[in-house]
Length: 114
Length: 455
Image 1 (cartoon, rainbow over the protein chains, first blue to last red):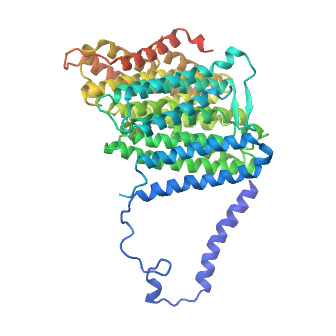
Image 2: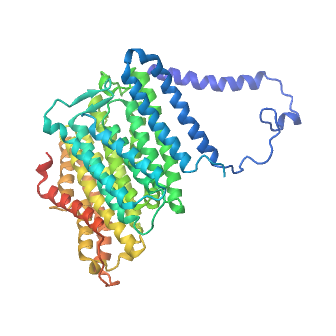
Image 3: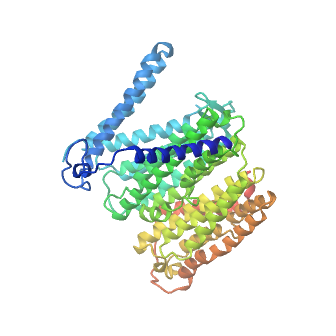
């Protein structure tokens, strides 16, 4: 309990302290350029509430599936020697399910840009 | 052989997906027949270990997966719910031929698999995976009627609340790992929940599951989602994930051996009071049943205060509640199809059009109230007895007062059906709906008269 209180107090004070210190020490030279908005040095074009095509998500999802596939394939390769044929069969079942999923979304037309 | 029910379920799901993939407009009859057959096979294979008497109970995959009597009870329950929901679904979508209907069964089966994974593991990581499998399929099932705006809205709301609940749960799990150095509940020697971090960890994990069981303060999603979802899915959501949530909380409490009774008693009292008071003013039957299911979750939480008597009462009440609620939703599906409305007022005089249906509806509601000789009475009796036995007399009194409050809104529906005048032409009940209703009716009455068959 005591540890917790100490950590909590120090944590809160540290954040407040940093702000107070920079406010005291930092030079104050306001100018118009400092108030202008920028994103990575670029002037934003249009509003930030524009609607964009939800199809991006479908592609992102399909991409994540295969990202995860690699994640599982790499360790399976490493232990293939010690696990033997079982690991080989199991990873193929896994791949089969993934490929079924890919062909499903393909067949349902989710990969076509409309 | 040990994983046979799960493997059959997975194989069936992939089979349905492949069929849907090959044929764009699938044959409904074939889909339903294959799904029902596969589910029945999976259901029977749960009992296979009892026939062969092989030592099949135990832990597998480095203690990631348990096969014990606890998980077997819940597997049986989920597969039964799955069978009934598929049966109900057949008549619900009968009016229109749907494209992509295979997806519906695929998602439902995957969701059932997730539920089974959730209750069969002592490891928080595996529990989380199971929970997410259930959640994501549920979000999609809720929004399955893509052209219905209310359905999409419900799906989005469910997703946003669900994502929040998952995040809360994972935050709790991260504290848990930091404190104990393991995610395996059965390997934690003694958890110190008096320390702030320990208490926070358990509280966050509990609230993560509180979302699934619609426990206050995580019950906000319930009415909107229940109203917007296709009714068979509402029926499914109101029983299956709730039972799984309770199963995981039971596992957490028994494996960690922690003392949370005061907190659980408070949550229970708040949950049932919120549910019952809000249900009083509902005009839509699905919203009414949503608040009623919140209140029922409150009653079930009572059992968690007493490890000796309460835990078995919780399991008993979950089974009883599942049957009564599925039966009530079967009646709602039928009435909505017939009357084109989910408004309680539109049920005026329905008892004269279909006495059997009105009677079944009345029996399910009476069981939810807890009137003898129905199963709901035995269930509530066991729960209140457990509370009194554990020294929580006030909780039992709150429970009884709440049950009395609930009489008003349940009885109001029956009063409208029986004592108002309306259209009097006789109607016919579709075979599948009446099958589901008879199964639930038999269960509710049998468990009320002979509760010993479960113990």
